[in-house]
Image (spheres, rainbow, N blue to C red):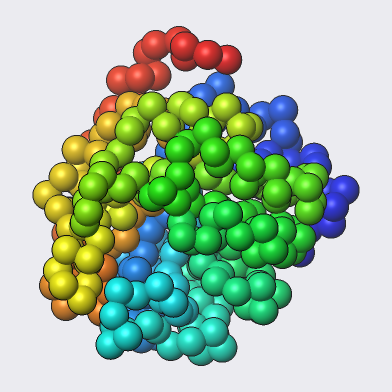
Length: 293
């Protein structure tokens, strides 16, 4: 894990470049990509999908962070597949990192999981339903890993300031990311208020747009969630136009067969086109001066 002194001298986004270079817009860096399956289905599946994602990202010189969960502790039904569990899941993620040289993101649900997850993951994710859990946020922050906090579907964007302050109170130099993943709109539906992407940036944290979860229809399929994946490219382009730092996408080579969240996952075959569209939007925006420094 990085030492406290070293962390203060690096960019909060990439954790590698000097902090004075951390503005992605000034450097004209492309959006980075967080992508992978919802849950680890098997070691072979995770390794194979990681290879496909890495190939596509490297072809476009994109930073890729591979994401997958070792335990989906918040499934709609007790019968839903949860994953391989902490020990086996982290072993698989460590193998993805070793074989493909990728950074790893995984979510933590309990304070007791944090130390073990931090041994493997470069980014510890606080799930949206847990974004107000002080002990969990602060335990993740103290590891020195990047902490990605998802905005709860029930939270106003300006209320996420408190989550950022909790992390920084535990470790002032912590790198905090904030992820928009939609807001509840009545029952079994989510919408995205694109203004929230600008509001979240005011807290001095990189902003990620979780495109696929924003298209989830929670509980709409009875004992599991539904989704509207036909709108993935539309929202991805909109997020790029809004100037997000990263895009979060769950993808699967055969979404109907996915063991979790297949209803809103991006079919892997559509990823090339989506990335090219996003980069084209960013290329068009590069001709304009940013509205804010």
